[in-house]
Image 1 (cartoon, rainbow, N blue to C red):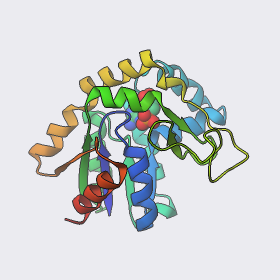
Image 2 (cartoon, helix red, strand yellow):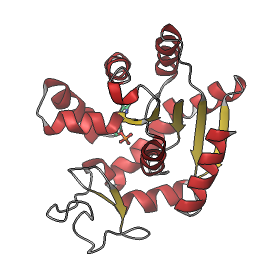
Image 3 (cartoon, helix red, strand yellow):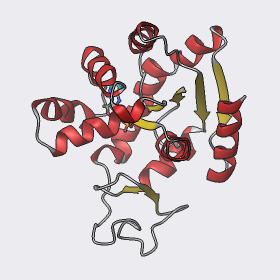
Image 4 (tube, rainbow, N blue to C red):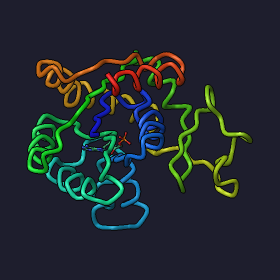
Amino acid sequence: MQVVLLGPPGVGKGTQGRRLAGERGWALVSTGDMLRDAIAKLTPLGDAAKKLMDKGLLVPDDVMIGLVRERTLEPDAREGFVLDGFPRTVPQADALDAILRERSRPVDRVVALTAPDEELVRRLSARWECPVCRRVYNTLSAPSKDGRHCDDHPETELIQRVDDTVQTVQRRLEVYRAQTAPLVDYYRVQGRLVEVNGAVSSESVYGALVAAVDC
Ligand code: AMP
């Protein structure tokens, strides 16, 4: 099954997508994580992407489309995948349809997670992640056991993302409204969208997400 998770930064796509993919045996395809891995490996792609990401801007469509085209062919994506952070523009959504049509594997569900901006800003500024496994913690609502290290990698100190600073978060929300929010209508008019309130507890969001995926 192929699932797209849409929604603004901080709404919980990564956390919810990771759990859904893990429980169903699907791949989690997070384009943000793929770019952060490229940055960590000091590749030319990572170098170019970092300059844009640090400013809260999007990486060009053709680069992202190429990455997703390849990643979704990997063996762990054979049974299905959850896309987190892609598509982010209308050209990316069109390309995704074309890629999956070629493979006769359509997008089965598009789930849009929603939350008010104040909540997103509050969550993003409290967000810490494990640089090894990318597990995300929140100092307000979901801290790690000791508050400093990853529960699954006790030797590893949690880090805060460069683009989670207040100013860059505002820019990312503007970019979301201008370039990604139109995708909600794009999928709604096609009758492919299910909206899920992402501002409630993580358990409740997950329950609604599973119901949306299984409907
Ligand atoms: P995320 O982890 O999904 O919040 O993504 C972090 C950053 O990576 C974004 O602010 C963009 O700079 C870049 N990025 C991730 N996915 C995409 C995409 N599909 N298209 C363009 N840029 C992306």
